[in-house]
Image 1 (cartoon, rainbow, N blue to C red):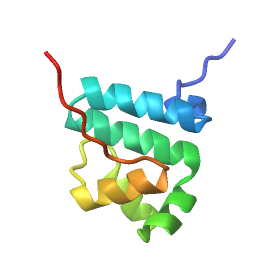
Image 2 (image 1 turned 90 degrees about the vertical axis):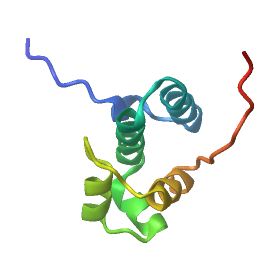
Image 3 (image 1 turned 90 degrees about the horizontal axis):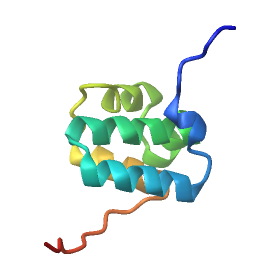
Image 4 (image 1 turned 180 degrees about the horizontal axis):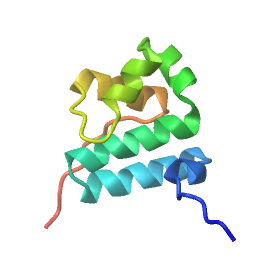
Length: 94
């Protein structure tokens, strides 16, 4: 039996799942992991839809959200808004 490559985007099928995934990565991940996670979410929703909502081209999105990319913060915010997310700051308790 052949195996298929695991794709995180295949499992991001609800707003709740997307939010949980992104919150975990934001809490525990580094910059590269966060950009990659946002890319997975954009793929799950559809790059064409995200491109339309952000005003960015699909090739620009793929480039900005690829492994090792360093997108501008404004791009990250546009994509987060397009996927239905928001940035919220909570105080860290120790």
